[in-house]
Image (cartoon, rainbow, N blue to C red; front, side, top):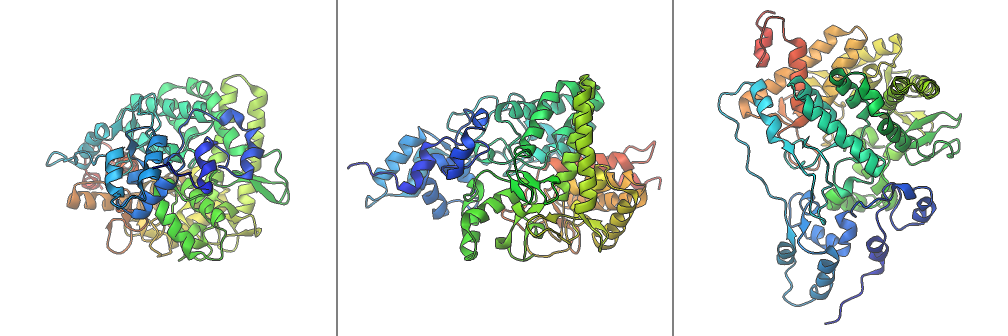
Length: 556
């Protein structure tokens, strides 16, 4: 039988290497290739590119309840040979695609379920989980979608078998609290390695995550490490902090007013702010059929633009939330790339401040001054544009429509967290949050009930920490403690009932493990463990050993 030709729509994708921050097989590929040649690396192509129409066929067959399963499957042979075999065999009368997959791919193993020792306190349980969640992948199979990292790292848990960028900061807070500074150091080194290798920190260490990043917490990780390793950490990681900044600010010099390019938005008055962006505009490899289904519902939308907005929503970490939608109940109205997010820009303010500090530590005074001025400009822009004057809280900005997005979300507290809010704006935001977002089990993400996981009734550990720290910075200790303790009570009650910590929690109504989104509730769970430890130690009375949340109330 002669080998069939690869259909034309897949040719470009199969032949072109993945341009890490460019587009795949489109006109923009050629335009960007020259100035981004330095970011072309030996990184492997994602499986949907390597396997092309075979990847589409397997995901369309819905063999696996979780589409990430096949994204993480490892080809047993050269993917090009597997693809050629499939092309030859697929039209034969007795061809069995499921058997073909089993013969040619190693599917990710479930791994042995961790059974914690009976009778553990909450603290003992978390401390016991750190080694369970630690992975070492300095060498990987050449066809694996997993990207190697030089040092051990802690994964979130469950289906998340790789390291995630913004999750890791909150996990590292817990590692530090448990005294595992060696692992904090390892993880900072891994992210520094990714910045050197790829020019940015990908969403996670998978080939299919290379086209985007996540909320930029690297500068906060360096801050954390410096608490233990000293000021030298700043000058040591200055080159990588600069690479992080260059990634986020690419095209800032060339984009014209009223337009955006990659992650940079230039408003009509020339103000430069940032947005989330993914370099690819096809269905997400790990949520392939979900995205195709969403696109089928959105008959009026350009599919490539919709896919980019879905991917950029994943880059935000808030995948998905009414925060990015025109219609709060309809995912297909997502417009992430048209939105200037308040949390992203607060984090980039912190990166600029950290670069100013690190440059000074490295005796580069001119650079230090330049970064300090950039931070000052961004602070003024956030306080002007990312502020809902009518409601009295920080929010996102629609740069396409030149209008504030009025919704109050837990992201409103990021300017307080990064200490860039004016006292008046901080007080107003705190009052709005107290009135609208503080619920029985902690801080709710938004007040929209739509089945998305970054909406009501869910509360997330990282957002509790941002709230507590941010409110504490502005003298709102009582409200901060109220949020922190309500969340801790929720975590403890769920642990007492189910003997696990989970990815997200229901914070209003029937409290406990959260729901919604594209996959079942995951346990483990890196960032919840980290934030729980930090809050327990923050609010534990002196002379009391707090192994459970109830211990914290002994002398109150």
